[in-house]
Amino acid sequence: MINQLRTDLYRLSHTWGILLTLVFTIAYSFIITSNSIVGGIMVTGDSMSKLSVVSWTLKDGINASTLSSTLLVYIFIGIFVMTIGYEFSQKTYKNTLVSGITRSQFIISKYLIMLLNIFCLILIYFLTSIVSGMISSRTVGTSWQNLFSMVFNTSLVIAFFISVVFGMAILVLLLTSSVVIGSLFIVIFPILITTLHNIANWDWLKYFDFFSAAMKISLKLTPSNQLWNYVLVSLAVLIVTMILSVVLIKQKEL
Amino acid sequence: MEKTILSVSNINKSFGKNKVIDNVSFELQKGDIYGLIGSNGAGKTTIMRLITQLSPLKSGSIKLFDKKINQQALKHVGAVIETPVAFDRLTVRQNLKLVAIQRGINDKKKILKIIKFVGLEKKLNTKSKNLSLGQRQRLGLAIAILPEPDLLILDEPINGLDPSGIIEFRKLLEKLNHERQITILISSHILTELYHVSTRFGFIYNGQLIKEITKEQLDKVNQSGLILTVDNVAKAARIIDAKFADKFTVLDDKNILIHSLDIDSSKLNQVLVMNDVSVISLTKKEKSLEDYYTNLIGGVKHD
Image 1 (cartoon, rainbow over the protein chains, first blue to last red):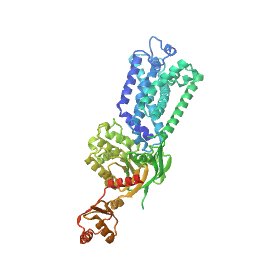
Image 2 (image 1 turned 45 degrees about the horizontal axis):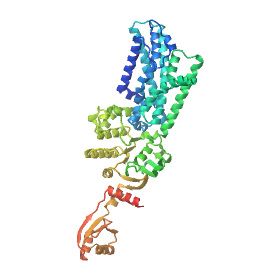
Image 3 (image 1 turned 120 degrees about the vertical axis):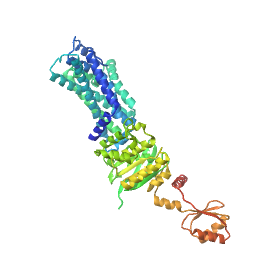
Image 4 (image 1 turned 30 degrees about the horizontal axis):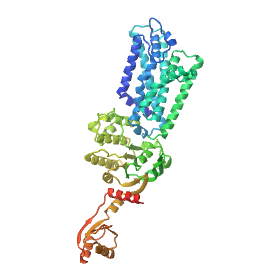
């Protein structure tokens, strides 16, 4: 499996798409922090109020970037397409699966590569925010150690929650054999969950609103008694999705 | 002693109610080039997909080196199934580098050697999407042989190749088989080409393996014919029946096929002439693999 991870890293590093994703991520972070604006698809009034200060510190920049991180998922769709989509659209899985790798190793390695890439890009996203703030001569707003610790933890949390949706997209891709539908799922899922949550008023749906969960946990807006519910639901969804994907690919006519 | 590389036993495959592979069994010995012959939809590709586990096997067993085939065992297999696949946006070298990493090959020179071996050295830095079909076939072969497999599975590898490409590809396969002792399972619609490269043949019809034959046996079967053209077929037939023990068939009012090349043609000519039968011609008939296949399938259809 290590070889497969190395293979995917080599391939991605030789793909223009990953460079474009990196450029968009840096540009997006730079624009948010430099102009003191907040974007995102599920930004709430509560969270916004934290940033209603006149002049931002580097810490405020990180918070703003966290709030705006919901949009990152659309930038990261390319990672899904490049990591596993190409294998199916170009049928190169035929070479991969005859290389001695098991189906479960194939699925897990693809997930891990996506997680790793998302984590690294989010880390770069926050580091860009810090650099942009420094260029604008902003103060740190906390200790440097706290700031970096915050960046690392937030990156980890956001990357994990985004990766859950990407993991589900792998299952959709295997079910439909369509990269387009798999990618569309990533776009539609958060919107669908939020809309359903608002219309149906099903409180439990909030645990499946992975992007908002990432944001709330990072900004410490989640009540401490609900924190583990979010984590456990996400982990359970991820594990079930991975198992179903492995079962499906074992039964699938490839 | 012959070493069995691949053993396929009683495999079956159905898609819904449609049975596409029906109780197929065959073996490949080390050094074999086994030509799988059959029409479109006969089941050749499905057999190859079952061997490479791209299609799940529900019934029967497939053994590689006497062990039940699994993903680990596939490390010893190189395959090009249906069409050669490579990442479009990567160059020839990058695609092979990718396979080298995947298979844990650290010898950097090996990639260049393989590229040279398949004749793609001038396309080293060309993106896979810009290669011609023939060049893609070569890249597919390079990807399959880079890990030095013991068994190479090639599904219609000469599709789309021009005549010179076909000849070069044949030489490549012979080289792989002779120099590297790679056992090859190959399918193709171009039977003349398959005849040239294969040492054994398996004929698939409607998902069933209806016949297995070695090249030697095939040659023997195909060469055993003399066409005798005479002015009086009935008289000639009586003479052959009385004086020669060989089997023969009256084809029409002028021609008789004698199913043997061992018959003394000059004596036959002499005896016929002495009995007032004019011999217009006596020609050796060599049937091709196509003829054999057509007869075989024709026979099965009539059954």
